[in-house]
Length: 330
Image 1: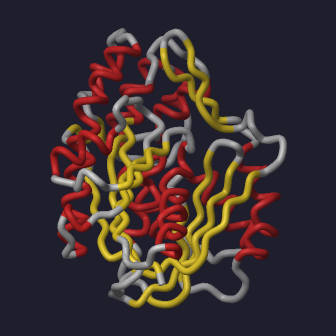
Image 2: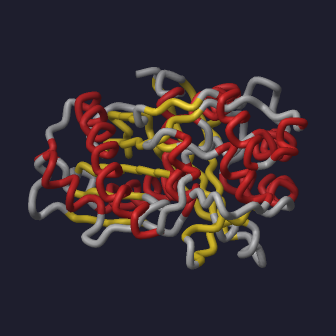
């Protein structure tokens, strides 16, 4: 048994309400004012007007080095408290982020700040995009199958706003600027305590889809790639893949908060009812797309659910991460 015994969430202090975000971005993309879009609130590490000031990639990464450990520490502290676990109990820490780069990696600074043991096993995951949080939970599950007495900490921190380039007027950059937000989430997993159970995991890489989702690194920084065909490819492909992984009726679903088109593709492919993804949609409306951290935000919203569940997250590749869950209403 692998159990998620504690979850912790954290967002930065600058809240960007949906309408304000739309107005700010309309000044950059005038045609946006005439578009009908779902309102999305988000949180940012800097005031929104500072995002339009020219900044080098180096200056943004220096800000990441300051802000990312602070958010990660807050999320981890809350997860540890929820699990009734001390930092010195942690045997493995898996850190996840695709929006910043630190060497030494994030969990080195985090370990010093919260008091992780010097012999803790550290696994940084940096290039899995939005599927990274689910992939980290899957890796934690595999670790606990081998060593069920261990305690594994998963921490995801994404500062998506630091990847925004005001000089990039592409449609992909516009889409990203309207849905991505900043935040962190953490989970404590163990094989010896009750909680939201993780019973099985699987990864599926769709063939010939490398160009649909990800980042291109340019001289000015991160250039988002969000191909319009993404939702169509998912809708056509995930039904069979999911059915091979998890058959039978399910009581709840946790889907990475990627946006309305992703939700609709999942609903159609899996023949879901109109309320099946209500919590996933709620997370998206209140926080936006938090990349790897999103799936943990959704799981936190579903932590008291009972019965059998399924978590799905999508990332570059095109990758599908699947987690089979059993909730006990803890």
